[in-house]
Length: 490
Image (cartoon, rainbow, N blue to C red; front, top):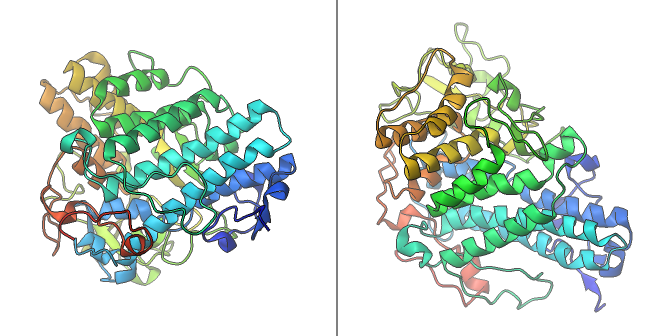
């Protein structure tokens, strides 16, 4: 049995068969190493399994995006359901809180899947170029997972320039007990690993995966570049955001689009980038779901943000509502809904559905549990680049053009013209709150900028010095990995 290897080590039995373009592998349990990579088909199935590990309920099935958004000030908890992130919303998490433990386990399971396949493809009967492409896809997913981890369990990069404790880095598969006794690397080292993976991915990924569906749901060169703009932004390395962003938006003025590899641009109607389709040139990477491949109970973004049909009234019907209504939008002064900078005619307000005689407003970007979950959109890349240009160059024509490209797509009557550097930066940050609402960015943006997590509803504000500013290392990890130390204050 020495050659037996658990390909995906954790939660492998949760996988189900589905169409290959939807990134779910054939059902697998424990697989002999020489069998799992014995044919090109089985090798590709193993690669699909790496994507499947990232789209589980705890991660891009919906929960991770919800964690990061409800820590911000734009949502109000309606159900007081401890299963659906109540402790995250009101800043009372502990090392034993469900989401603190479950997300860590799911993210490291996805990382281990990637590590197993990175090693295993060397034995596959496929060309070296394809081996490198598959490794690049796995390293992209690994980079995405590490960035998700380091932005919630570790202090932001600005704190000590990355010198504070980060998360544990694994680049080799864990297939035996006792292989997880590793200390946390510092934040800078985690980011170095992320960038190493993404640079390898950019070099070795395909320029085009050959179909619209594959380009949306599998990584290609532009996917790696797009994620690098995010990573450098969170590091405060604005010069490199500009380098990477200009690869994807080289034009000086709108319309902006990529000029090599897969074509990416903004869609004229933002509504087309959400829902069950999610296959547009704006969707750089999305995770797909079908009726036979759902995120799971109480995981989907539709469940969190959409009210139940029973919330309808005769004057405010919602015949398509099918969620739990865990989180409504904050209608207070600090919430984005009533921000005066968000114009009334903005098409993005079409995603709101007023229920219960206007006492609540719900985010309706997702209306079905089968809706694709966006991980990277071209609109984010444009805003990443705009912010970096504003911080480096101040007010110039291109950063204003990038900002207006996103705003005027939804409200062509507006032409933003901030006169000062700070006014421009503020306008870009506001645009991020509007454009990326519900997509997992708000609290991460606050943390990367060293800002207080504002109060909302009954939840208090959280200062950057508070232990609750980041999550604790889960107790489940501390029990099995004696080399790991806890964050201060927990």
